[in-house]
Length: 181
Image (cartoon, rainbow, N blue to C red):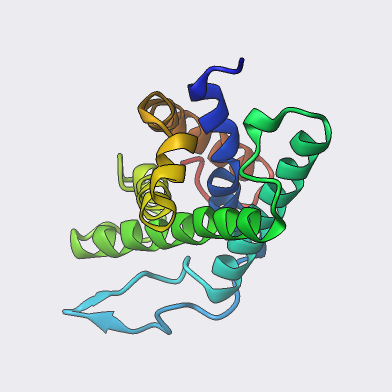
């Protein structure tokens, strides 16, 4: 039997993948169109429609692939379901709301005067994870609690800053990011 915190970490991979994938696919069509609200940019130039779409696509695709790899290798504990439509809905919710949470974090950062790309403890790491989890629970109710029980949520919240930092350092070394955070 696989511990629930490991299962939750594996099942959360679509959310973990979506966010950094936006860096790879981003750069086209700034979401806020350069507009401001109350004298401050809404999101900033780093948040683009191509990044949002690419992040959701990448997270969903990886989630679907992993689900069926684990299903076909008889590791059912690491799957969402054996029904394609259910799996698609679940990985889409994790991926989309991961990206939505990142946008919320950027919106808050602009309101408190943080420049786009500036490091902000907690606002860089947690909104994507918290929104993905919250909306997964909203959409899937008791199945959400079954797949992401408290030990799993705690594990996700503990490893999120570590994964975030590691991915950003890799992106910086590959010259995909201008800063290592």
